Image (cartoon, rainbow, N blue to C red; front, side, top):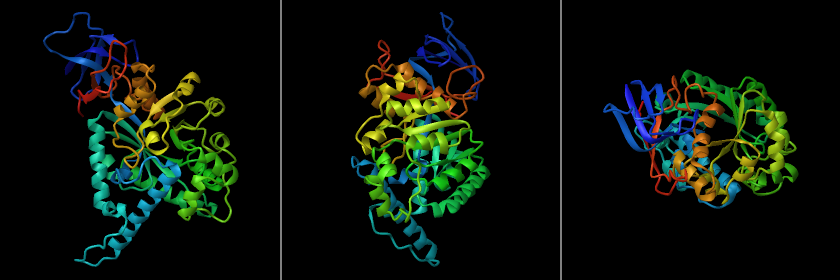
Length: 419
């Protein structure tokens, strides 16, 4: 049993506690939360900082960790997808060559910048390192996008609790049955690995209507759904008149069929083609307008996921946070992937929000990155708040501006409890 105290404790279920005390069991389960009032004794650990629950990452691509620093920044989503497709093509070439090699031979290296890290061992090693870093930086619970099973073994042994979002995409209606079968196969592997999962669409522009409807059938009982949403202004261009940078990227990759059959617009896709069950995490949202938000929020259980560092790196702009707050949106935080970010830690995302929106208070940043994320993933009974009976993990935030309740460039986070 441990008794931990700090200058301030943000529990998420009561007002901030000055010099409060948290008592935990040996496994980190919260036993008691007290106001302090001079009750701290020699058995109490005191920290000059802020104790908060562990972070929840609502959008991550662990399987892309080997692409860190390999895709140029600032060229827009279309260029990013083109570069990502090229990297994935190089990986497939490497895998095919490795499969053909005979005993004792060395697989021929694939040309291209990404090929040097395209072998399976390097992919797994990069994901393992990213998982360790994410845990060290305070993440307790993570919703992770999956296009293959390469990270399942890592996640099944991780100290982070993962929820697999098995992603499906193809704008070609003819490929819909095969894509949904591939997702079903991944779902079976996820179950075998002991990892909870949902089958989800990638984005409005990358999923044909026939495939949307197969996904909706498979996901009718989803506890959690997720979709990349309004990440680029090119999304509506693609849907409305088949033009723009996304059309160019898909054409380059050979993904455009003779006849495209996609939703009419982003809002109709969300309201009509995505399962209404469970919570829905809309990811990125940097081009989401007020009217779009007002049409979608009545669905209920909608969470607007912000990945600001990735957004700035790819599109060069921030999500419309002030508008989302004005509309009463439930906000959660993600990191995207190391293909578009330098870190999978949540604190850099919060610092970026604070830098661009100085008026946002620390309590809101912590709420978005903890209890809101736990609710979005249906795991608020264990994570997200410092409440008796929960096991949320405890973090220590240091060098924050506690007088004004803001993060600073020097703010750090560290773990007080390690599972």
